[in-house]
Length: 288
Image 1 (tube, rainbow, N blue to C red):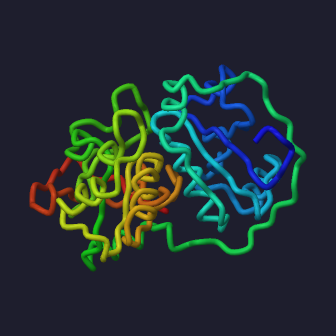
Image 2 (cartoon, rainbow, N blue to C red; image 1 turned 90 degrees about the horizontal axis):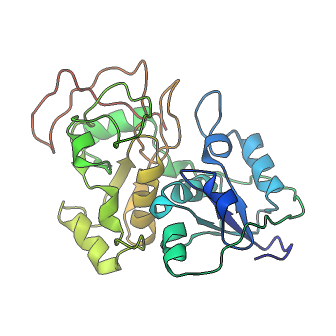
């Protein structure tokens, strides 16, 4: 992957972008989720033009095979995978286990940054079906579409607004009424590698999800739910959609990621299809 061959590109996407400068897999290029995977003004996904510029600058063509990996068990690598899929890039892969697993295997790392020839990139066809927006979620509440909240149980119950040490600008706690809480870490082993397919199926079948229904997954800003979205679309027959990175403004998140929508209409939250309305813990609405 160190050759200047546009047929394949390896990209690292970390929660802490500075990890790349410390060391990375030989031949990997850096993608900064703060600046590359969202519009800095709207906090939505990048525009088509911005995405085309990013891909071209990374030496990617529409025919390139793009492999993503990153820290935190591939949170933001999965988000990047989703974004490339959303913009119609056909050949996308996720390195199982991500950066952490690679490091534990004492696999090669380097500080050398590759230089690839920029390419011309044009989006052909988007895949809008993998993104759910706020109206889709409101419709889902009426139609009984399966909603999966992949955040921690404490976030789901509205006890905390974000994982400890994180400040994502959340305005309210709670969850979308009727959502199931299936935390993202239930799909991976402690190594960061994905669980076996039979184990993954068991995780969802426990909640009555058998692969024959539409599913919207969400979290806070889209990275955790992207990992679950990846699993549900690659390891089952379930048709899953979600939202993208809309965290602000009009409010929206990638694949069902929950966005902190500042002027979102309050939604009462119930606990796992029960009643338990939380007057002071309304759910942040997604905007996909």
